Length: 316
Length: 173
Image (cartoon, rainbow over all chains, first blue to last red; front, top):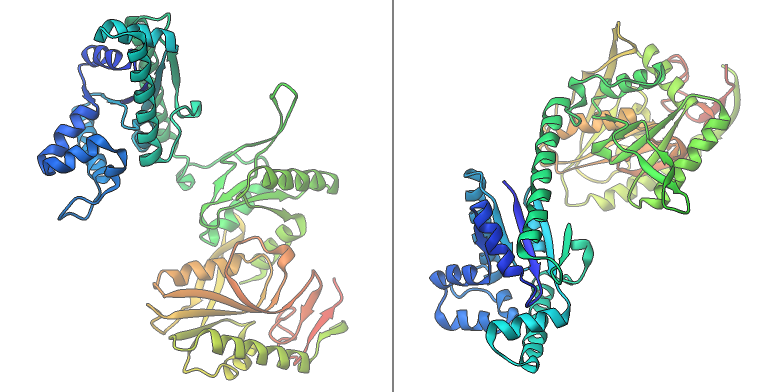
């Protein structure tokens, strides 16, 4: 099951593409019309008019209820997606700022459909039998409304390209060609998700206690045992932090701290080697913390480690 | 016992303990406070400190040791003396003589968390901040120390020296 969000400009063929994809995937479309129909069932007509007139009204609290229209909309969409998930079918969300709120769902593909202003004008003129001025006006109002809706409800800018997995310009692409690209990507994404799920189920990266990691040396193994005996949950080298790049942006240096202690949100790097390596590790750890704020790395020095082992072995 | 120098005199310790006691009294007024000392090192400090806390506190001790394990040089840590007082919804202050890496303290703190106290904080006579590995809630510390080898006021070398009324640096092996 996947969720496809389509954010589209007026006249970009986004709605037509959504319909085409829906028929290909045999799945539901959630768009503004669908949502307004659902909301109409539980809200008075004058409130629905307000929602049609102003995006701001979505943040109003529904009379006699303790939630806003926006929250009601999300809960309805959640139900639709939950049902689709049960039936293993896909869902397409058109507009509504789906690209922002759908990030909470699993396997989401965010698509942006756009076209040049000239193309969009021509399409609207043909579709509605209007002149270029009227088409220009429609585009201007439509784009502003879309932008305002997402900004007011989700505090995001629709033109932010980082929101999308794929952006398509329909100036020179047909609906079928766009759909072909999206469906191919969707298939690959579903496949990757399936593989990831299998890997997670079989390799158990979180519960390391059931799978013994391969340590680089005996000190690391002993330190893991020390953490175990103190009942401190740990993960072995769970993450690699790139810390240096060349001019072309290729990673030339990275840092993989030996242990991560989830409860303490802390990375530990063991140094039981010569001093020259210790300084190198210290620099890497320092750089890592500078580049990734909120990342705590501490060095376990040789003397700490040896004293810990000695103290514990004498302890009895 | 080769004592190099006295690091904190009996008077230094007494003054600092009074300061800590006053601070704890102020911080925990109107709260149910249970003070838990970690055996054996913290017993002297806990005894003096609790006398300076002007609150109706409850006092308990906790001890831990390790048993040999063939797979590790370090054995397996276990609680040898658990607390007797119910600390559910109470505010707990763990008393330590010294915190270096913080592993022991983290272990004890995790153990006590299972009893669902309202809060757990730490008070240690000595703290070596440069060697602290764990992010643990050390709320009160008497003195910050370096890597010197210390004995006295609960700290020992092979069980000798705990009863010294001062904290002294000894020669390394």
